[in-house]
Length: 129
Image (tube, rainbow, N blue to C red):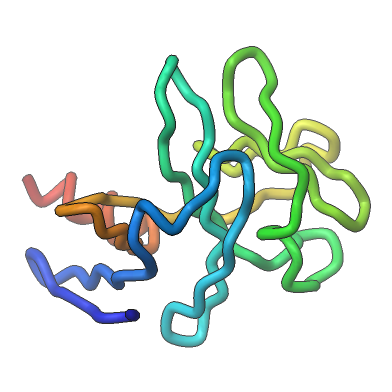
């Protein structure tokens, strides 16, 4: 299913159908040469799709999609299945080891299809107006 589209010189990659995601369970996708972990998580009373790097910042292992989904103060989190470091799925902040950071990907849904783009691209698009 992977396909790419370009909007305002930024590339979005289709990774799955939203219906393919199970709540509180991760899936992995290969986007170019990057591994992305995709989660459907409860947030603000609804289910939201979040995407982060699948690479554990502490070990370099591709395991984050198998992490333990939870929340802290209402914010969706994932804990690494290896060392249990807990990361905010919105910001990538590590609550247990502040020196670590999990790269976050921008997500969009259109017609039931989930696409991702590196967060830097999304920030560039927002800055461009």
